[in-house]
Image 1 (tube, protein in one colour):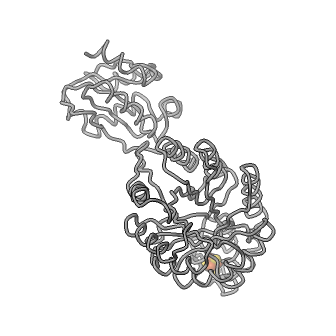
Image 2 (tube, protein in one colour):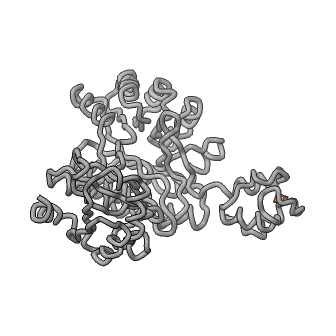
Image 3 (cartoon, helix red, strand yellow):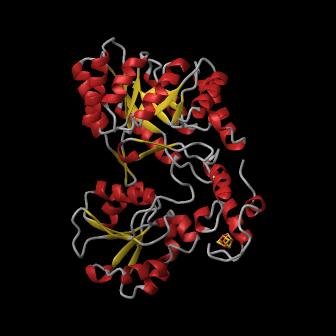
Length: 445
Ligand code: SF4
């Protein structure tokens, strides 16, 4: 349960010494309650305060780190809905390998897992995990495949087998990869949590129903192991949606610790479209790790794009650096366009200019990551601010051309821009970036 400022104040020394940067202990307590300060800022906090506040400040969904240097972070979420603040750690996407797959198929999947890269709005989107499923009976071969996948991808692995001994062998073989062991049953989990602990891996739990899963998570935590994932025992998309919603609500609203862990889901409906729908559900409904049975380029691009959208902080638009970008190989007298530094706007406009086949300059002043009309309405994309950027960035001296194309949606700033850029002529371009090609052909060539 989150503590109020007054409850926290009672745990502080009440000397109002100001060393924490706040004028009073109460003011500091209010900051702590709002998660705008850390207890370590008070040098006089008692052990009791550290114990109580430490437990209270644990995120309602535990953050678990996997992979080399623990770079892949999962869980740690604090809101039910993205617009309340933002989601923090995006759903990890991965591909599954079976130890019984043909060698060429295994090699091809490992290569995709290691090399897949989708660039979108300046972000590099990649696969996060590789899952290894034991379908055969050779524990040595299963562990060997895990080692091979680890060596070639350096991605954390999700190791799945019905045989606890095989999982143990694989866990030891890839010690250092900080991977995830999937316990096939509650009994196996009681055995495997020690293996996970000794080899620095996490453990995914499952049970016949949600109540038993909750009991198992509480039991393993009481045994001193807390790096757990939950695999909901669901049989349909509707059940999975419901279980994920119940668990997240219980963790966030009721601080129900046994459901406050990231989740794991193997998507394996046997049908590409249904797999895509299930994976979509994981991305939009709190999924921790989502493993797909095979690679499909169109499906992966769609899922990666959806994930990027869901896990972008709605309060911080993705931005590109304000500067004059070269499209092709522009010369000092090449056409000059201007747009805002909202990533989506920049990449759409620059893409359309590239499609025109011309070399040009694309001037992107600081607009706090807003789109054209929003930036104009907020006073961040005015004739004066664009002119200031062109002068102060040195771009005016870099080029000989004195003609600037502005987006059609802000035609009204052309006069102000010409006033602030003496000697320059302002042309009003099209409203939509998709019309740039015809504009270039009819007005600039
Ligand atoms: S440093 Fe500690 S004791 Fe001093 S004012 Fe801040 S909270 Fe109070």
